[in-house]
Length: 156
Image (cartoon, rainbow, N blue to C red):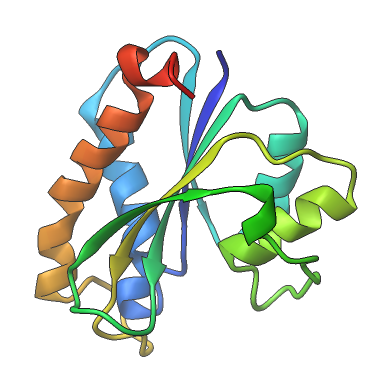
């Protein structure tokens, strides 16, 4: 099984760097199960879309979740084709929804997909996570490990 774990976000916008930070820590942690790739995509949404086209059986996106909720709250969501709009290419706003929407427009199929997201505190120009979002990083890592464990992968 080919599993892709993708950290998404802009590390120059405070808590938006959550996804890349979790991905970097998972990579630094060491070996992952066979067939699993962990990549810090940052703001390279089209690169992610093309990598999915190469064949992914399970996709785990790690991202900051702006909007309602308590900063630092961790959310794990399953995303299906019915959750994805058409997606329009915008070099400055490639959200996970946009990336997945573009995927279908360029001939791809959405694999089973999960989002491990964290409610954010600050999305201003700044490098580094706020304390509440930083505290969610280990919990996000644990959630990703559960999703990509050999026992879990067989159920998707």
